[in-house]
Image 1 (cartoon, helix red, strand yellow):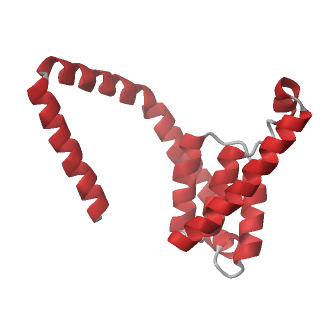
Image 2: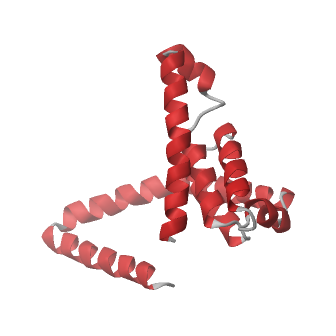
Length: 160
């Protein structure tokens, strides 16, 4: 476990103790509510793990590394951003999926480009967005989202 994880655990435990001291009834109520929420999410969590397993089974790590690796950052970032723009995956599945892609060899910049376009750009949902908000709005929002997704990816490449 890294230092940040340990820090989060320590802070969470300290804040829980303070909350428990301040109001035992409210803290226990919040813990019961959290337990209920977690039990309702177990199916989704298992589905996420299963989906990631399927993706990593059908797309071998060598392919991920060759497409999203650091050999040609511009090309891999462009491909990842385009695939992310077309793909429709909920964010709660996208984050662990991208983490798994990085674990098997994807470079950070293409992975972030994939993640940000996946959550910000909607080619699949464009017809509905166009119908509800108009063509100009839908095109502008998607174009700006794509551009900012690339900027975010490049910025993360510099930071990390």
